[in-house]
Length: 167
Image (tube, rainbow, N blue to C red; front, side):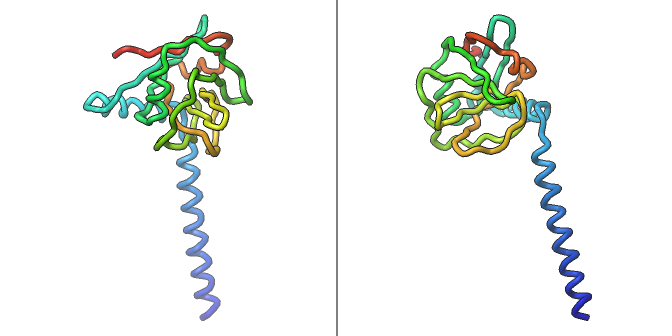
């Protein structure tokens, strides 16, 4: 009888653990397309009362458009535009640039996710454009999502212009 109860408890725990891993895996398997759908629904929500901040990042050949979220940090970046700045390679999944002034990250959500994410790395004061997926990192804050041209992030080189897109 004790063995049967113990076996039942172990099987239940195993099933619960498997369900947790499955849920975590499903959350981690988001891609740029699902992120784009989320930003488009956010865009529709924005039109009914929230801010709609879009920016364009452009080198001589490539253009990427990002929809910024409604965070303090995203607004802080948006308010510094327009500017021209040098884009740099970093790692094997991101391009970075340093805005003229550090961003205010008060109440800004942490960044974690798929390619196409725009983030701010507070410890170094740089904006990050991800062309590959990435994990959570202390001091990394979410600014928005690429809504067009996300496939060009990897190709951005040299001096880029970062500008507001007027509504």
